Amino acid sequence: MNGEILAIKIGLVQTLTFADGTTLETAIRKQPVAKVEVNATGATGNDVGLKAHHGGVDKALFFMSDKTFEKLTAVIGKDFDWRGTAVYGENFVVSQLDESNVCVGDRYQIGSTILEVSQPRKPCERLSKNTDFADTQKIVRETGYTGWYVRVIQTGEIQQGNEIKLLERPYPDLNMMYLNQLVSGNTGNEIKSQLEAVLNYEKLAEAFKRTVRAQLARLS
Image 1 (cartoon, rainbow, N blue to C red):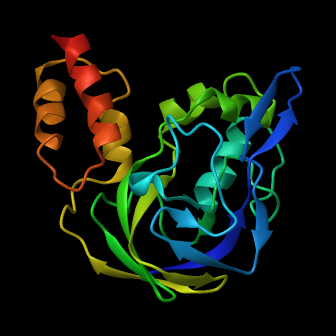
Image 2 (image 1 turned 120 degrees about the vertical axis):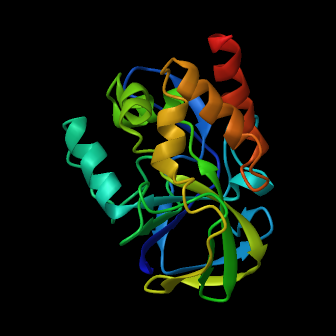
């Protein structure tokens, strides 16, 4: 299923004071642009604040479905619009694609770039601070409305309105929602065997594999 780039957002690290009084260095409030140059580790004019957990080759850019944005926003009782300043740190808002039909290893041509899906986003507490809703991080984890990260296979330019063309799908059963559900805290032998199995998928990012191993350790 092909989609479309509905919005592009980039931003550099700035000092923000949130509604709870916390002050942090963060790039979560990215601003809309019409086009962006994509490089091996992200995009020109874009950065991340918490580099221990965000950014890098496997988390070069963050994608979110327009429908996921709307569903998550409704659940937390807000009126955010995906067309404006980033709320969840999103670089791209897209149509047609979401956590149920995007899989690890998917390769997409977008503009002159080729991008490969690496893992779902693991929500952090900054989502709760930026939305001014204490349970946002928890809700993202429980619903699986996480969005997904990509690595850059071919650099180039992406413009608003570009088509998202699926080129390859090596792991059709390894979609984002399935992975999110695996690490959501379920127990049992079946879950354990499924967690062990996903560690064998080469294109699944190492950061997410660490989360899987931690879940396996809790089950042992």
